[in-house]
Amino acid sequence: MHGVVTSTEGSVYEGASVVLEMSGRRPAAATAQTDSNGAFSFTDLAPGAFKLTISARGFQTRSISGVLHAGRDFDAHTIALAVAAATNEVRVSADSQVEIAQEQLNIEEKQRVLACFRTSM
Image (cartoon, rainbow, N blue to C red; front, side):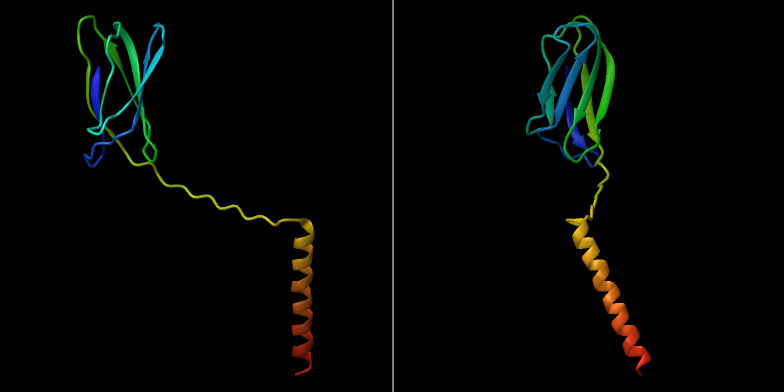
């Protein structure tokens, strides 16, 4: 079994993880990484149903299922991985309740000073 992993633009992807799961077989799974040409291969496989799961950092994971027939080679051809959507998470937190209370007090004091200043004009 063999294939090539690329980006959707056609650039080969080195270092992608390819996991092969064989139904009802021991060992149930084998793992390979793509080489500098984006290629991967598995040898000496027993016939039967399989699932290939291809993943790479920054790309969406892709799975392919099929059946490997006795005495036949399975060519997964080119497997294109789409770029994963970028997500950013920002968490804002105060160090303590005391700091929050102090900041609220400072805001109230500024409002009082401004109110006094405005009434004296």
